[in-house]
Length: 217
Image 1 (cartoon, one colour):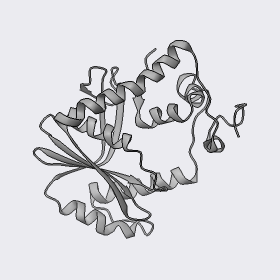
Image 2 (cartoon, helix red, strand yellow; image 1 turned 60 degrees about the horizontal axis):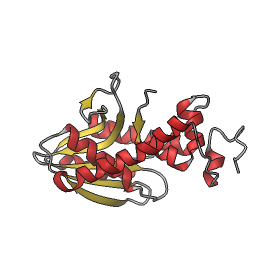
Image 3 (cartoon, rainbow, N blue to C red; image 1 turned 180 degrees about the vertical axis):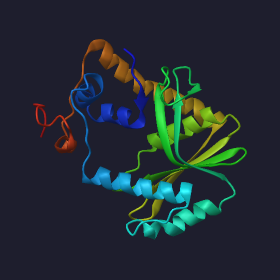
Image 4 (cartoon, rainbow, N blue to C red; image 1 turned 135 degrees about the vertical axis):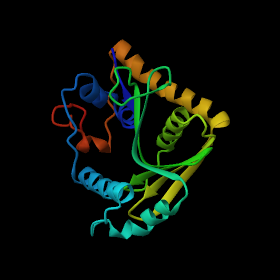
């Protein structure tokens, strides 16, 4: 079957293959979000408008003005909400192309001649998953062949903290690709065997399947 991927879909599978099956394979349920995700979307939109269009931040996000100003003062090329997509050959393609296979959206991408900086806004609790930063770095290397080093960071907006990791093309890209393919292998095994193991956890109460899943806590 034809299936595309993202960090969030891979994370969904790792958290609970059964939810992945109902949401991504049969598509019988849809995650409509909650108050936290709606808030996060609103904050992302404010920051995007400030960086891309120079619009004033709202009262809700005004405390991030200094952060935005620092980004705009850099000599780098500033890109916001940058969509990056590759096909199965790890070649860049367009977002809606028929061969689109793995998609990422980078909140802030700062480009220099041979280096880049990736920033990902986070509005929730500080729980860094560096796999996401690895995949952002992978996308950046694949889309910009001249880039040799990518500094990535989660920016935790509530506490104004950061978690940062730096990657280099020659040393880290092959390792990231191998880890990425290993994660996808588990998904394709589930598809082949039609085996979707449930993983009941505290996340069940947020799951769109919890009204019919017998494993929901």
